[in-house]
Image (tube, rainbow, N blue to C red; front, side, top):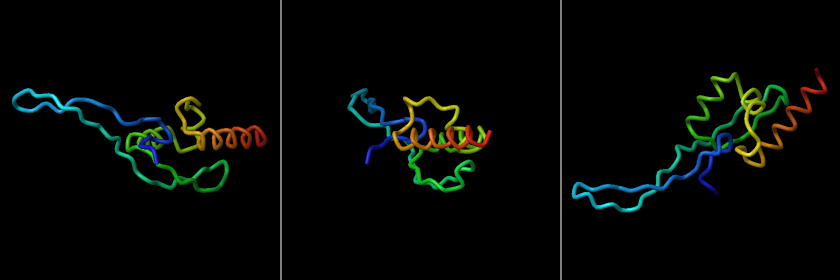
Length: 96
């Protein structure tokens, strides 16, 4: 399983750990990933996601999973989320 957020695409970063003597050694900065279940209002079903804590705040700020996905760019989303976004767009086009 990749260490990548399904919604924002945030992944592992690489940097240096710097000691008191200024010796630099490689280290990894891991994203704060959480397994969550979110509800899609348009589809009327729940979706299991692996998202970072920042993405959870963004979803709440934008007004839910559907609103977040409709505003998100396709190249950042995971393939499973792109399919979900298309399904939501199709459902809204059918209803509206």
